[in-house]
Amino acid sequence: MRSARRWTVSSLSLLLAAGGLTALHAAAAGNPTVGVGGAGPATTSYDGSVGPGNPDPLGPPAPACSQSAGCDRHVITLAAPKGWTKTHSITLAVALTYSSPSGPDLDVGIIDSSGALIASEFDVASKQPVTAANVLPGNYTIEVDGDPTPAPQSYTAVITAASGPKYIPPKRKTGGLTFSRATLVDPYRLGTEPTLAVATDAKTVYESPIFGFSTTQSFLMRSTNEGQTFNVLGVPGVGKLDQCTGGGDSDVATDQFTGDLYNIDLGGAPEVPARVSHDKGLSFASSCEANFHDGANYFTDRQWLATDLKHHVEWYIYRDGVLSTNTLPGIGGT
Image 1 (cartoon, rainbow, N blue to C red):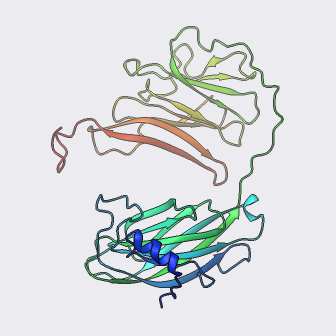
Image 2: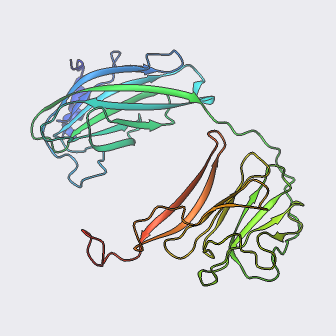
Image 3: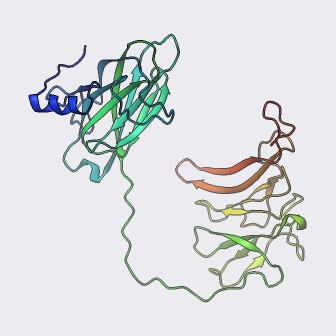
């Protein structure tokens, strides 16, 4: 059931002056309300309807509509205890339930009290959530655009608020930051774009540079005295860690265990070696082709590692770019 409209003469005049045939449901005491921390229900809903139209002809991503047809707006209220956002973050979400013979054809936007569009999705499916993270308590406008629904479309909007503890970095003393003299890590090889990782003992430091594809070799250096001196790991006199082809971009990472070390490397396409050591780099378990590829047309680049201490996962992320599209079916040459 649509909420009641309450208009003053002045507000109605302003709406008409702005071409206001857009359905705008005024903020009132009866606004649908969601809350966190016991300040209100976590979920609420309302029914709405949006007329046919194409309010954002420029296409996705759908902005909040500025035309007169095909828009439906409802004001909702997000409640929270006083001071809640000092220690908690809040996420506001809206999901539409509707049936359309032409498939997903409604756009959804969340607008804050200043009129800024803080979240939007185009052609949302039924029950697909649209979320705005790190929001503050207050009033928000939920806008639904008929883009381009061929006939009036009824829907039910389900509004949800969720909250969790906010990460607050520990306070550190200011000042007192100093640097030691630079350390020459490798006096024999010219490496570029080095990456660093420090173990949890704060004494063991790892460094890995780019040495070049043509060399097929990668090097990994380790310091056990807080970076004062470094030694090359791997085969003595050679430095190669294993049989994998390397020489390109590399990255190193550690986790909560002092002896653990992760290394990722880049060989010629499509080879991307990945290694893990549990003894500070004295030995490695390796995979010479840790990436997924569909053949020689794909070239992996700019790979890096990220340590997730909460879930005990080491993430390996890389970009997969096309070398040539001439032989890829359905794409054609460039």
